[in-house]
Amino acid sequence: MKDNSNKKFWERIAKLYTAFQEKGNKDLYVSLCQKIKPQINENQEVLELACGTGQLTVFLANSSKHWIATDFSTKMVLEAKKRFNTKKVSYEIQDATKLSYEDHMFDVVLIANALHIMPQPDEALKEIRRVLKPNGILIAPTFVYEAEINKVRLLVMEKIGFKTFYQWTSKE
Image (cartoon, helix red, strand yellow):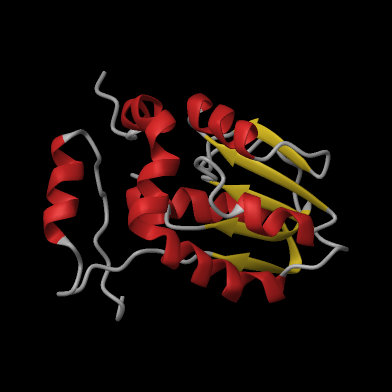
């Protein structure tokens, strides 16, 4: 059976991912964190899905009561834990489409820059809705594919195994 989830790609590049993101997307992540931080406070239980190596976890987790950072890649979670290991953060291996948490458990669910690379983002959104408290906050920034996207960079990433399942535009 063919792995249609990108998991092998993420396992393979986990050790390089932080450096790659900091070189190419550091300003993006700083800007993203500045926009997200006002939505999180010290009374909230936060679930972060697709945490990668902790690009957002490092900057945002201390703003919460407790933060659970998850990814479906074991190696990504290990790298995130190396970068930022504190009692306030728990790291777990989770598939965003089949979460092991009880209903209505989290005040905030964060899934940044991941829905477009999931084969079934609708299943992840159903699970998010289930685990999010009524009146909870979903924060789900994602890349959009417009004329200004770095198509050369995307092509190189695809050649080494990266797969984008959806290329939404800002209108979508």
